[in-house]
Image (cartoon, rainbow, N blue to C red; front, side, top):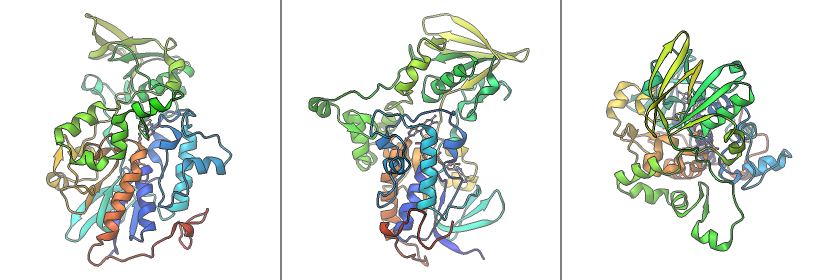
Length: 421
Ligand SMILES: Cc1cc2nc3c(=O)[nH]c(=O)nc-3n(C[C@H](O)[C@H](O)[C@H](O)COP(=O)(O)OP(=O)(O)OC[C@H]3O[C@@H](n4cnc5c(N)ncnc54)[C@H](O)[C@@H]3O)c2cc1C
């Protein structure tokens, strides 16, 4: 019989890794499964820079020993709390260094099925084999929730794709590519495709692409009127960062409205000179219909100003983001879905991130409707790791094994003393 651990984590992005580091520090018997920083390595465009500022782009260990700033200084890389865009490659390398140091016990395996049992959960792996855990934390990130609008979804996959499918784009050189969306993913890809000699057109629903502004010098009055936080400036963002617990206590309709409206996925200011006036953009347009014709796509666009316009492209990329929907998590079987209390297809969570299925927890973007927009960003991993660790370490399940607590000083630069990875 496979040994049962107290906690298992699915996913090794900023949330899974930060929580695993905290649980190890608290001596909780835990296993974690996934490929480290996989989303960042396989579904973001090459050459991208982060939208979040340096001081909001961390993974979190309990002693705060390896922040992005410390990693950059250790490796002679440029860093600033704000105003210096962090290259994607730096963040990925930092995440992997964090994993090696604090989560050397990570198991690079993909969970194919999570099945509730009388004493917890069984996890079955794509690679074969199973693991058992009394409690399960789902930190599976965003990939399962890729959204392609229905008007183009039925087109053959050779003609339409989601922005997450493109890390390198050199294969599109000389081709006509239409990108739908005005958010970070769409605009990032538009810049990259243009640089790689594709003939790109950006189709944006709004009247113009709304870029996040660059940080400006701020007076003390600015700081009072619009305080800084991990989600940018302004009282609303500040409140979301400072009081996720209060957010959780707000009425459900209010929470859903804030998550839907606050902090849309606007592109970062560094992209503006690469796209504005450089990449042809059709603003105020939505796709009315799409049709394949002779191996190409004819897009009929409905213009907000009235009338329609037809655009022909060799390929359409949906930079239309992600819509959290528990039915898209392939490892949750119908039995789990039937028992999961959801609002808008996202799990209703307790103050401890626990779902209606006892022992099943969700973090990251799946928890945004409960704890606010901060959960859509790496910055929210600090709160999630602390809150979950406080709860799980003080409520061990019957029969669980306690590991020795790991003091922050016991973590060496190379890894957790006395463990193998
Ligand atoms: C283009 C783009 C730019 C972004 N820029 C920023 C930014 O600048 N700053 C920021 O904070 N956020 C940014 N985000 C949002 C970012 O995706 C989240 O902040 C971040 O990924 C949250 O971390 P996570 O651990 O929840 O998810 P992820 O990083 O997505 O990690 C989840 C992990 O779970 C794994 N997993 C899923 N299913 C399984 C399974 N069945 N078995 C094993 N493993 C599994 C995945 O492979 C993945 O590695 C951006 C997103 C996009 C698309």
